[in-house]
Length: 476
Ligand SMILES: [Zn+2]
Image (cartoon, rainbow, N blue to C red; front, top):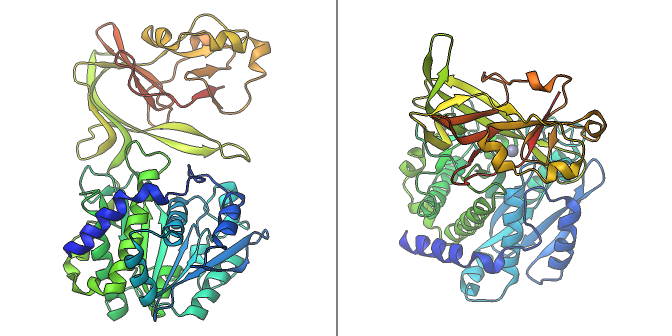
């Protein structure tokens, strides 16, 4: 056990050497990985073949490495907007292509295992950064009916390999909690059930023990941030069926982490987890892991919001009441490039004990109030750019209005500027009520002094200059 842990620490500390520098954010496309695949084809450690093509004709590749009798099969990004593990797989390819002090570790793995890897099973979904394939089929509900080109590729590779172990690599919502705690689930794992009774046979038990060893390897980096995905049997899903068909299936879900919007830390955890797992399969050390390690990993729960603010005074007709407020920011794809914008939403108002924010602040003594509209209507982009936003915020201004000719230039739903833009006919009368499902647009004051502004769900401490506003909203 301790040698496995030391190895995980060493892999983790040497990670930067192998990190694929061409992949820097989550929204890369098929075209971005093609040159990497072409370069890796030249490394003698891999055999790279085309496993098939997506519905739109994008090549789906299969990497093979090692010559051992134990067969492991990994695939990533079957859901097109779940790309964290794909980044880690390219880091892992670089790891195996290098010659260095890990040579003995690699040789042991490649002598004992034959490893098959499909990076990016759903390139058409990745192109649009959407979950489903080109025909809007969820590939992970197509294990039986086999109506998606990508699902057929996955099944046919599985049939030809007959793997002993499989790694089904996904991303989950970044707001799951680890059980009933305030900790966000950075990584969630599962040995999927193969029937509704959730029975444990030797195939599933092997997966559970391997997950136990992965948990032990990761727990020193993210103590308390590892959870278990729901184990309800899904008869249409690949992991569940592969488990039924004799492969010990391990699901790894990359979740959320504070200050890791592009999931680069989670990518590093994937790198460490997968290589550690190869090591413990090669040495059989996972067999010594108690089943209780797996059983004691808490399930995902839904107690977390992006932001929770507590004990705020809210003015009412009769005086003041005290509220907690919870809000999220969801990402919305914006066009054919890699861009997205944030769209905030108030989720809950009232007593939020038992719920937690990734950002969670007790603001006792402060008052929440609607923000104001800057009184001067602006007539050019230059005028907007020259605004001293922090001075506006300190006056409680979180909306600006534009004159008619400039307004035409502001189509769409968001603005790159760190303020909301109002295009209504009577902006001076504009107000956003602080209510659930509305955008989180408000100010927080201590006495008469504005301490925070919240614009489209982005909270900014204006006296200490903490927090940034990625984008404002266009309000009609
Ligand atoms: Zn998924």
